[in-house]
Every structure is written in C-alpha cells, then in structure tokens.
Image 1 (cartoon, one colour):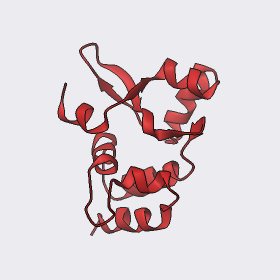
Image 2 (cartoon, helix red, strand yellow):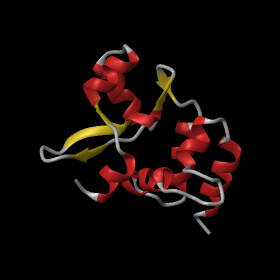
Image 3 (cartoon, rainbow, N blue to C red):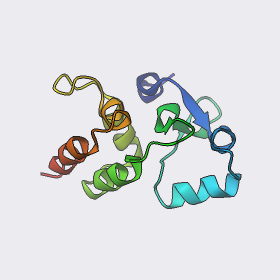
Length: 117
C-alpha cells in the first residue's frame, strides 16, 4: 500500500460510489468531470477510487466541490489535493477533510487559497 492509500484509509471504487449514492455510474463519471469528487488509481490493479470520507450521510460532502476547485486553482493535482485534505494539521486540529465534514468550509478554503502564495 502506498503513502496516500494509507493516509486516506478507506476508498470506494467508482461502482461502489454509485451504489452508495444510489446513482447510475454515468452520473459518477459526470461528477468526476465536474470535479464534485476526484479519483485516483490505487491498489495493485490501479482501480479508480475516491476516499470514502468524501461521503457523509449518503451524499458527497457539500463543501467538497468548491474546496477542490480552490485547490486546483492553487496548482494542486488531484493526488496533491487528496493528500492535503487528509494530512493532519495541528492548528485545526485534525485534517482539513474532518473540518469540511464538520461544516468549517470557510476556514479550509481560506487555507487552501493561501497555498497558491
């Protein structure tokens, strides 16, 4: 298992994501195209998967799409974005993803914007 797989922990394949959200796999691909979520190829078979913590209460975390956009604008790749979201930050405390899941999107987006400087 590589570093980012360990950092994130639980992953969902795209078909699993579709099942969790009760949507068609084509809708999952649209979500990827529209950057509502981002996926990486993980595991021995390099299967496209998303972090399971992107979901909360049967839906994608509401503030994730905008945060991913800010990270992209700051020059972060999908892998770098996921790594940043799941890396412990003592000043939060916890991870940026934990903060998003608890409704602290303004603080996290401000921190993401500062990454570009």
